[in-house]
Image (cartoon, rainbow, N blue to C red; front, side, top):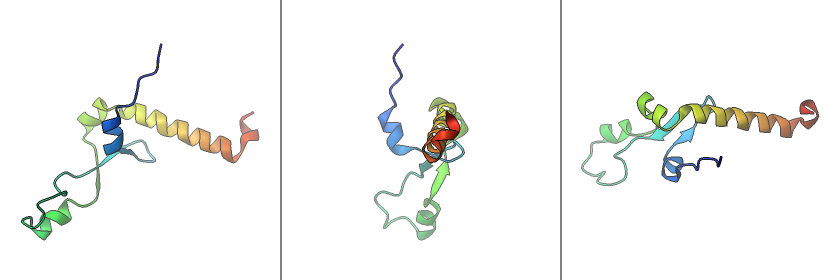
Length: 84
C-alpha cells in the first residue's frame, strides 16, 4: 500500500515541537495593522499550540511518531555503532 502524502498547505503553516505538539502562528497580523491597536498586535505575536480538535484532525499522533523517528535517526547519526 502506498504511503499517504503530506498535506503541503498544512506543512507550511504548522511546525512540530520537540514534544510532538503542533504549533502555529496567530491569524490577523499580515495587513491592515495601522488601524489595529498596539495591544492587539502584541497579543497576536508569537506561536500558539493548535487546538486539540484540529490537532487530532491534522494528525498529531503522526507528528509525535515523526518526532520520535527524527530523534532516533539523529541518535543513529551521532553513534551508529550503538544501533547495530
